[in-house]
Amino acid sequence: MKTEHKEHIVKPPVYIAVAVALYILTLITVWAAGIDLGKILNTIIALSIASFKASLVALFFMHLKYESKLLWFMILIPLILLLILLALPILDVITRAGYFGM
Amino acid sequence: MEQVLEKHHDVEEKHAGLEGAKMGMWLFLFTELLLFGGLFAAYAVFHTIYAKDFEIAHHHLNRTIGFINTLILITSSLTMALSVWSAQTNRKGLLNLFLLLTILLGTAFLVIKLAFEWPVKFAEGLYPGGKEFNHLLQEGHRGQALFFSLYFMLTGLHGLHVLVGVLVLLGILFMALRNTFSSEYYGPVEVSGLYWHLVDLIWIYLFPLFYLIK
Image 1 (tube, each protein chain N blue to C red):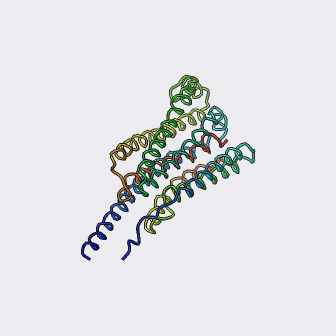
Image 2 (spheres, each protein chain N blue to C red):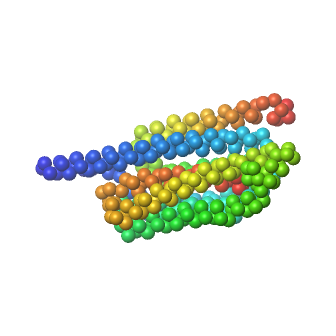
Image 3 (cartoon, chains in turn purple, yellow):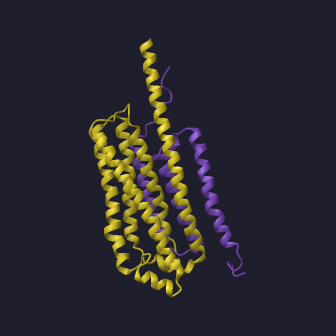
């Protein structure tokens, strides 16, 4: 019997490629912030790029891509809690009378 | 035969130990995520209510410094990942080198923050309790004051995490110099790496939220 679940070793070229992608995405997000697309669109673009960068860090630097299904399932729980934590207060604020000039 | 089985059992046990350690660190990282999540929620709410004030206030931050610090943290994450690889493949010299680089980059991040960025804000009185800060409150620009409160709270808490990360990695480097790690045993390197990457991950959100978004 071989040690079938020995840890997956990520090789340096993968790490370097991820870092280069992170540098480029940082440049893109700074550049995109300079273009005036309206507050909401600018915010969405900046947060999307940030989330993409965060995914790269988690998947490759933190080896999430090679982790067990159990860990993936566990991560869902704080992410759902985080979503509730962020979404409910924002929804509360923007649906109050007066926010959209109502 | 028995020896082979025993050896296999040994490897199994070590593997289970590493898996458990990693899972423990992930659980801790979840609590970190929610700790910062609460502050991000506060940011989101006040940014929505005081949109104009936040736009004015964010021009006071130095975007170049934020950008340089972002590059530094990304590079430190790369050297941290390479430390883990060095340990996994038994390259002890490289392990020491990459750990040292990670520590130096983390320190550089803190030095830039504490010696170049914050002193400017302190001199301007733009910190909670500062002269200009109180002035903003009295003039009715509560949103601008809130922006700086959130800025110091969030980047301060993040900076504290960087500091803890640097101290942890100093401990790891000390262990590495004493020949503790090998391709058979590198759990502490990988687990502290997870923590370091989370600190990078949080900064990835802080940078656009404070320095870029209007």
